[in-house]
Length: 132
Image (cartoon, rainbow, N blue to C red; front, side, top):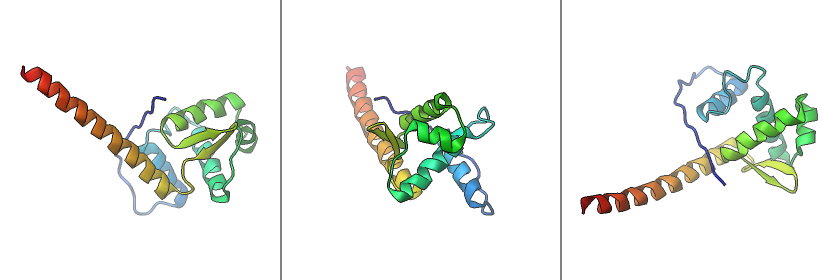
C-alpha cells in the first residue's frame, strides 16, 4: 500500500489550548486543510483518538453517527488517515496505530526514517551507475 506522509513546518504557539495543539499536529501532517471548512477530518481524528484511549475500534457507520458526517465523507477521510500511516483497519473497524499522540508521531517518524534509508540506498546505486 502506498503511504503518503506530508510534513508542513508551521509556527507553534506556546499559548494554545489542547484542541489547537491537536489541530497544529494535524496541519503539520497535511491532514486538515483549509478546504475542510467544517473540520470533518479533525473531528474524525478526535473520535479515533478518544476511542484509542479505550482500546476499541470504530466502524465507519459509528464514526458517521458520532461526527454527524455522511458515511462517504467519513470513508474519504479515513482513507487519507490510513494513507498517512495514522489509522489502520481491522475487521471493518478503524483504529489509530497507537493509543496516544506521542506514540503515533514516533511511528510516523520510524516510517519516514525507513523510507529515507531506502531512498539513500537507491541514490547510492544510481550514483554508482552514473559514474560509469
